[in-house]
Length: 283
Image 1 (spheres, rainbow, N blue to C red):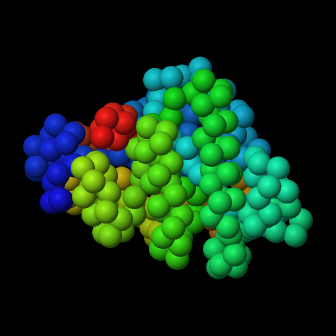
Image 2 (image 1 turned 180 degrees about the horizontal axis):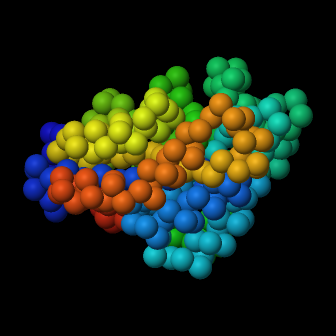
């Protein structure tokens, strides 16, 4: 399937420049929730993804229940990055022992090689289903699945599991890498045409200028930016430390009028995952 097939499936001309801006980590903490809740009505941020196991996941779910106009996905979560701020599975730990460390939390980011080497796919499926089912049981209507922090190139079977779950639950799926894009698109399913941009990969120096340049250079086809807005208050700084300002700079970008002006001038079309979900569901 050629690179412009997604445009065709979505009803846009081949040269249309389509962009999904998604806020990852909704539910991680209050500082992140507050930033996402403030940014969504501004219109640049078109969707978010929910981390149900996190301490502020319920708060995020209550907001989404009250605001069905905002699209959101399920941010499948099996890692907890920080040593002093942790979370664990929704499933009873006795049922998913390969997902938790010695003290019963998800593995942290530094332990990912160890985690990926020993995690049992069947147990990961139990937990991922629990996270999806928790959202559905609350009466919420997610649009897609994506994942939190996992390096799926090291475990392609986990990617296949997510693809299976997306199809089963009638959801779209975020993909990453040329091989995965082609794999999904070869099945007649819409997916982003390029690796999604992870805002943690951008240089913090003059980040607003980087975002402006990326918008002006956005290629034809469907792109996705995974941004991580948050507010640099005492809570977030205690979690991430004062050397990490990714989240505040992402929030500043989402709230700045300049980005809207560039998008309008460049003719970029902002989307969320809802039109993709329709096609996945009907495939």
